[in-house]
Every structure is written in structure tokens, then in C-alpha cells.
Image 1 (cartoon, rainbow, N blue to C red):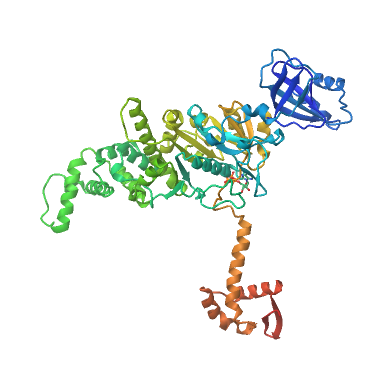
Image 2 (cartoon, rainbow, N blue to C red):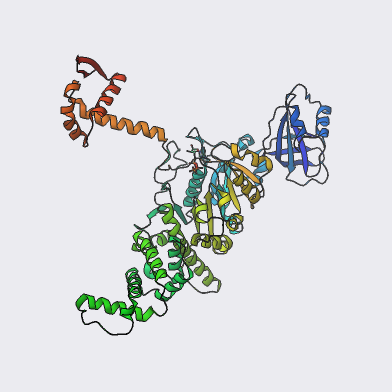
Length: 617
Ligand SMILES: Nc1ncnc2c1ncn2[C@@H]1O[C@H](COP(=O)(O)OP(=O)(O)OP(=O)(O)O)[C@@H](O)[C@H]1O
């Protein structure tokens, strides 16, 4: 490797016949006067005589570079020459000497650039791509992780990428972007495993039920494997976690109703007038709504206080109750349609079982520094997340605010909020959603309180821009859509060359762009220690399900072998009993013929009307 072309104090060109350069690789230039200087490859090209057109394109290849190559003895007509455009990371007091040699560094020479944190104080997320060449690592950086090759874990051979989560106090919030199948969910799982290992409390929203960490990934060596079973708690909305109605404030109730379907101003003022926080239960609030609707439907009956003679017993009790409610609220809340709208929204919330449980299990698990996985379908999570995030965030905020003024409040720990499908929780656009409001607030102020976001999405272009702008660290996996690549280019410092590679990145390779690192680093995300419940290939699933069904049917039919098709109809009820379900003539016949094809049964002509199937000897 030699310096060619025109060099400056900041940039040099390197050429080599043998070494192929890759973008982001760190190299050492050995200047006879300036000593050893480190630089990072920002563009890489290969030239050979069959590619004359590439000479015309790109900043790397100008005429002077080509002349210099020829003068230095490279034979462009005959051989391939690899060229790198390198930005120096160390300061040079004058331009680098042309012709100076360059080489691959040792780990010790570049360790300060590659590892910013010791493994015990950082998240071990994977391996810096291309770092295998740096030679043996000191023991403290070895054997920390495996990579996944053809779905098998193999020991990592390069420099670990250690994410300095402590730097999030200055550079908060993480974005994980990548198209379908790019390795984004895998990356998120690795991130969560590392947070659990460090006992950093975390609130995760899990719309796909995949955030399970109890099953070990097959083949992970035991020196690396960790047991996460005690480190997380999965809670299902409506079963283990919900909203305690008596805890709700009026704005919270309004926000919940709004999340079912947007509410009007008159509905909002009706809720403000009717709802008594802390005193109303879900039943008393619903009763009030119904009573007021009933009164407005027959307003004449309830105006004035003349009591009908015909009323007695339950009917009288009801009349008095409705009249009472009408007298108390009717003069302020008299829009029938608004009340119907609130009732419909409120009953929809109740139907989701939201009010049957509280957040106490989630709260105490966070206090125990666990990861809390909140499960539910996407639409339920969208409703619930705003409530629980606000609840946990304000608990933390109150504690910190009180502490700032020297007062003792109830302790609540710093924590992460993590979700996949983030563009559904905080979509871009004019329509305000309750979750977006609180996520924006945390994106802007969470740092002060030690509350950090980790938002994963397939569609960064659809994520709220205020939030995207606050994500100081971005993990960018394979991305194909031009609009998403456009957003990524605006929001990170990745180069044009890196952006052009985004559609072709292999699964599991991410560019990590972060304000605290100051440059983009390509990282192969490590193998997970645990297995998602849904890693089975759907086609293997078909085969497995098929063979299970076949085994069952074979066991049911076996005792009737040899079996004649003429007696099959009569046997169907018995076969059905064995199977525990009805089965048709055609289904059994197809199955028998399949077994003949597999060589398990033989089929013979029985008589002009049918066949006989028997076990092959
Ligand atoms: N770090 C990795 N190393 C090697 N292979 C990986 C890695 N991450 C993912 N893969 C491969 O890519 C596949 C898809 O990964 P993953 O499920 O994480 O995709 P995804 O980006 O989350 O897609 P979707 O958004 O559709 O869920 C995995 O099943 C695995 O085979």
C-alpha cells in the first residue's frame, strides 16, 4: 500500500495491487517525517483495464491520481489496482509524502478509536465489520460473543462493538431502522439482552409476542450464554396489566377516549364536567353517562319536579336517580350527540378489559431493574402505551424534580422505553396521537430524567420528525425504499457510498451512526443468546405439521390393514373415533395412495370394484 496522487494534511489516496479496501476501515500511513498517522477509508474503488468508464466517475479517480499510479510503477493496462480515499484521523502538520507506505494496524494502535468502553460497562452488540485483520486481541476483549453464520453461532474473530450506553446521558435515544428481514428484530433482541444483563430497567412494547427470552439459542457456548429468565416479566394488557380507573386524571381519560376515536371539544368539556377523578369508578361514570342520555331523550319528564303517580319500586328509584343526575349536570352538559359519542368510546375501552388491572406489576418490576414486556395487539398497545409511558415517565420525573430541590420523593429508577413498529406509535403528520405527544416530550426532555427511547421501525420516513431528529444513535440495516434512504441520509452522517450500499446489506449488518462516536461504524450484530418463539421457517412448519397429522392418521388406520376400498365407508366412523374428528372417504384414500408412493403400503387390485392396501413386507 502506498500513498499516491496529491495528498493534503487531511486526505490521502492509497493504492495497492493486493489489498482490497473497504469503506470505514482504519489504516496506518507511515510518513518518513511525520511518523505513523491513522486514517479511515471513506471511498474505495478498484481499477482495471476492463473498466475504463469508472475512471470518469467519482472523486477518487482524477487524472493526477492515474498519472501518479503510472509513475509509481503500477501497470494499469495489465493488472487490477485498488484505490482508497482516506481521511486522516490524526493531525498532520504538513501534507503526507507521496510514495509513503501504509499498512493494516495492530489492535493496540487503534484500540482507542474502536473500543470506547470496557465490556463490563458497555453493551456488547456485535463485531466491527472488517476488524478480523487487526490480529489477536487482549484477553479482556476476546470470546465475548458469537456471530451467526448460516443460522449457526460461530465464535467472533474481530473487535467487539461495545455500545457505551453511559454516553446516552449526553447523546440520548436510539433509532433502529431496516426493511423486512434485514435483521432489525434480531438487533433489537440483542440490545434488550444486553440491557437485561446490565440490569437496566426497560419498558418494551411487543405487538408480535416475540419478546420472549426464556429459550436459549441452540449452539451458543455456555461460557457466553446467559440466563435471562429472572430478568424480565411479560404482562398482557387486560390480564396482568391495565389501568386503575380511580387513578385516572381527567386529561388521561380524555386521551384514552381520544385514542379510540378522535373526540370533539364539546365531548371534552362534557368529560371535564362529568368525571370526578378519584371518586368515580368505571361503573359510576358509565351510569352517569347513561342517565344523562336518558334524561335528554325525554327531557320534559325530568324538567320541573312533578313526580308521576304511576312510578313505584325500581322504576321510581331509577326515575329519581336520572332526575338527580340531570339536575346536577344537565344545565352544563346538554349535547345529546356528544354524550352518546363519549359513551360509545368509553364502552369500547371497557370491552378491552383495560380497567380490570393496574400498572403495579410493571411498576414493581421496573423498580427491581427488570425488563417489562407489555403484550397486546397493535391497536390495544397504541391505546395503552400512552397511559403507561406517561405514568412511568412522570413517576421518574417527579422523583428527579423533588431531588433537585432537596426533597425526598418516592424512588423511581431511570429506564429505557423500547418498541418495534415505532412509526405506528408516533406517526409523522398533523394528526396528534396521545402516544406521539408523550414520546415527543421524552425525546426532547427525557435525557434530563434518565429516560431513553429505543425506537425500531421499517419506515423511518413515516416516523415523527421531531422524534427522529432526537435519536442521537442510529442503527441502519438493509433499507430498500428511496424515501427511507432519503430520511436516513438527512438524519445521519452516512456517506453517499454507504447510502448506495443500503439496499444490498446482508441481514445482520448495520451501520451505526452516532454523535458520540463521530463516524459511522459497520457492525455485524452478534448472535442472540435466546430464541424468538417464531424463528421456524414456515415451510419447515408445513412439513412438520404434515408429518404429525400423517402419524396420527397412520396410527388410526393401522389396525384395519389390509384395508379394502369396498369396506372403507363402513370403517370411517371407527377411524374418526380413533382420530377424535370426522374424516372423509377421499381424505383416507389420498392418504393411502401417498403411503403407497412412499413405499410404506402396497396396493393391489382387489376386485373390479376396488383395491386392497396392505403393509409392505
Ligand atoms: N445478526 C445477524 N447475523 C446473521 N443473520 C441474521 C442476523 N440478524 C438477522 N439475521 C437473519 O435474518 C433473518 C431476519 O431477521 P429479523 O427477523 O431480525 O428481520 P427484521 O428486520 O426484523 O424483519 P421484520 O421487520 O420483517 O420482522 C433472521 O431470521 C436471520 O436468519
